Image (cartoon, rainbow over all chains, first blue to last red; front, side):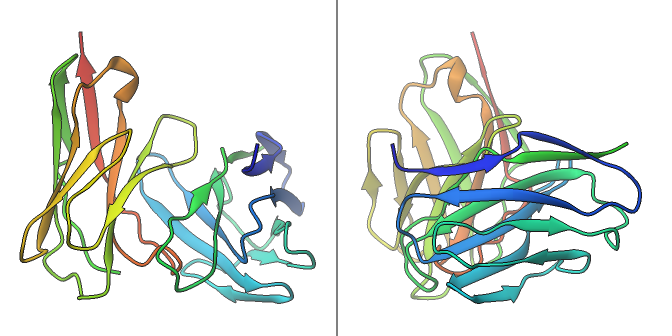
Length: 114
Length: 109
């Protein structure tokens, strides 16, 4: 089945540690996105990518980094500079930036601090 | 993205229609209205979208007012599994969507 796979489902980070969240899609979508969701809140955009080897900062990019070496993959690294990383992280994809077709989401990764 | 306003919460009896309103008075002419829902601890699920005509699919119907300043999502026969937070978004999905607080729908037996 086509879709978006995020892993792991749960992740724990120690102080000063970088962690990487995986996002893979087999929908042949050009655009991919990372959002952060805090309890009881809506989603906030961290980074997005329109095409391979290209990505742009969203509203809350500080303390995060991404790469887009393959069309199917858009990993998110939560660095030690992100002082409040505990949240639910969601990856999404769409056919292309600017298109009207909806974004599709993975089932998220819940990150907590040890 | 257009700013949207939704009620914080709503209740609906199981088997009845759930009508979820959304105001998007600042929506521009080429921006669509999208509806997603999110069940606890899962990713948002796309429901439906439209520009100016009413739309229907296997999940729901979307009624958009003629002036496009508001819309209503209709779940024709709500079930307990429809309990979720419903988000109304104005924009173009290929751009960066802005998710607000949404409406928490509780379907009761």
